[in-house]
Amino acid sequence: MSWTLSSESLIRLTAFVAVFAVIALWQAVRPFRRQEAGQVWRWLWNLGLVAVGTLFERVLVPAGAIGAAWLAAERGWGLFNVLAVPPLMAAALSIVLLDLAIYVQHVLFHAVPVLWRLHMVHHVDLDFDVTTGLRFHPIERVLSMLSRIVAVTVIGAPATAVLAFEVILNATAMFNHGNVTLPTRFDRLLRWIVVTPDMHRVHHSASRTECNSNFGFNLPWWDRALGTYVEDPAAGQAGLTVGIGHVREPHQTLAWLLALPFSAGGGAYPFGRRQGS
View 1 (cartoon, rainbow, N blue to C red):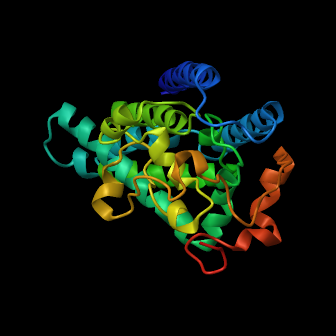
View 2 (cartoon, one colour):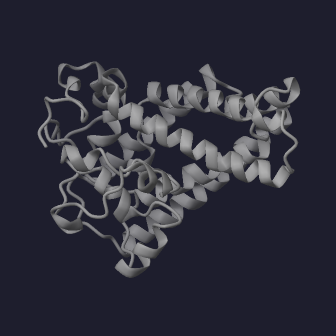
């Protein structure tokens, strides 16, 4: 198992570096929006948050979702470890169901005040680029992993499908947060298959209504089916204000981001009444 865990880490790291490099180069060559904050320091703190979150995950849930898949298969737990389903079908359905679980988790992180305090670290970024897709509070990272472990166990997802899902989720999160330019017609077609930057940028709007839309990270189908899809922001893509209306801190250090959920200003959340529309 230790060799397999090492292989899983290597696959995920290789995919992360490759996708990050491609999106970073793309947004440098063809950026969609002018960046408001100083990019060097902002990237340093955002990537610092990634490092701290990864450390938390490795210490608190070292086997992660892959370990849960192995254990479920060994004990016969979960839907696809009970039903006689062809392996490829089980893998494909597992990826789709895990994506639905991530959608539900994302909605809960907006709806539950204590969870929103953690998730707002992702939303207070005053810019929107590839590093925004990676900046999550370490406690949210751990809670997200625990929820994926539960989902993997209930579904009985094969370990290979879980690894594929983790790689896809990470890659699409970087893609749909990229400050990149896509032709409008191509974007409209592509967002039937995967969440695009224009689609997800709406979710980072300072407007409460728009922030509570387009929750999908990978597949766009859940937003369309469950009534949370918004095609474009009211102000248009170019006129959209990114961030949270009541938190416009221009100097967001790593220490500030880690402390934000526990600050007095963390109580206003999108599904509540104290934040403007």
